Length: 210
Ligand SMILES: N[C@@H](CCC(=O)N[C@@H](CS)C(=O)NCC(=O)O)C(=O)O
Image 1 (cartoon, protein in one colour):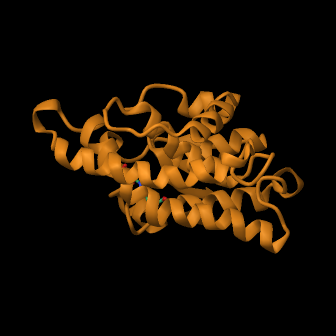
Image 2: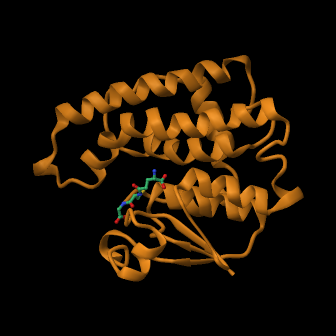
């Protein structure tokens, strides 16, 4: 049985759970990280020396880095995963570009917006750092807004791909963190409305941020 190790309020765990529901792949989820501990045990570190979540195990196969896990899960699903991660080199590379961009550019830009508000008590918040993160996140999301300005329903066209899942999980934080200073991004909002209506999104990302 495929196992996803990681607490369900983690954005990077949520990506995987959203995808697994889209694929209809059975899995077992085990809490790990933050208040659940586990990540510093020798057994967990043997799977993931970073002590981070998510980690997946599938028989003898163990993998970490959420976007690598997304790719593995669609490839393992065979036909069911093809539309989400197309085989054509140009189409696949285009999806991969957004996964890499989420990890390298969007994630660092938006981290303080989320952590500085949702996971920091009000009297300890550095609102200047949060405001900077809101500005930098808005600059990132405006790239997505431009991408969607031709009326396409999804990042890569008319069908859901891993790009929508990796970016959609983070978009839940842009729309869900109650902080001012966010720029209006109408195409991005329209896309978010579409993807957040999916039952698998609603199940894992539709609740309040914690
Ligand atoms: N680049 C990694 C980031 C992993 C990461 O930093 N995960 C966070 C949760 S989103 C974590 O492990 N936090 C510490 C904890 O939960 O104990 C990935 O995409 O999997």
